[in-house]
Image (cartoon, rainbow, N blue to C red):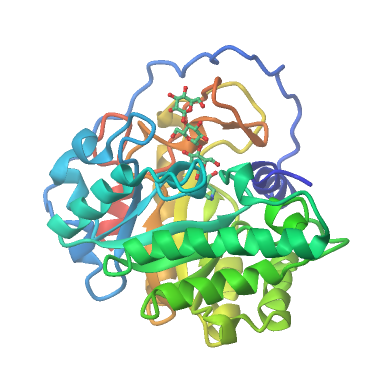
Length: 385
Ligand code: G3I
């Protein structure tokens, strides 16, 4: 089973028309950082905020760190930058492995700080994530006993986790990514990601129904989402549609689909984005863009870091085209969230050769503020439409 990162880069490679002629050997040390070629910070003569520009369209959110890995977005970026957003989501601190690392022991502080910041600044909070095959501690899964015993034990632990987390934030978190990335990336075999502690503990996909039932009971007014990547891939999108219909998820509380939107300078096409939005809208579902960022490397495996100056114009045009499409669909999209605030902190610095590598970095430029926390031309292209 490919990892998520491998699948995103594979999907892109398939989508790309460029033949990769050479791939340099992967170095395990930090790769050479780009040359000093820089792009002067943009001059912003308007100084209006993203959230105000999109007042008539949808909330604009950002993924933030609340010190769970040593980075605190609120102090790092300050209210000036953060005031561009009217919604935030936890990049990591509400994930099962971070918020309940051992059974019954909760690390509430990070998530509490995030919620407190949102309340103090009039922001909404997206909840990410309740049930996911990744960043979930092994104790949540039951690997011994009969399948029925394993299912019963895991179900009880899932319910307890969701009751505790969703219950604690039910007055502050308006929507949840209830289940994340449960669909297979393979066009053959099961439509579900079967290499998953949830799937193996249950022995089937009914854990997905339980997750939505438990979240719906814990916070009846919250909007509940199924969230995934490469949803624009027609075969994977069809598998998600099949899951929603086969499991009758709308009757279990599903309100919408989250398109993660980890896209690149050339993938996916605007048409594929439009088709995907229409597919789920036509099913009577809400759609959100939940993790938008733009990978600036067409060759995912290359260790040759490129300077921002080499991609600045393409990135600006790409963001302009994507946000025009999103604005055109403002009646079908209820929120757009960027997966980060500025280029100084992006998971994409570590996604190289199709997998996440903590100990290797290759500078990427996926967001609207640069690594010096300055507005990019892409920021202006999104705001000044
Ligand atoms: O910063 C610490 C470092 O000090 C420490 O030495 C190192 C040792 O493990 O950990 C570092 O923290 C890493 C953290 O990112 C830094 O932000 C964690 O290991 C690493 O697991 C964590 O990765 C997160 C990844 O999910 C895990 O799967 C990324 O931040 C986060 O952006 C990414 O987000 C996911 C969404 O939740 C779901 N959709 C895909 C998206 C991208 O993978």
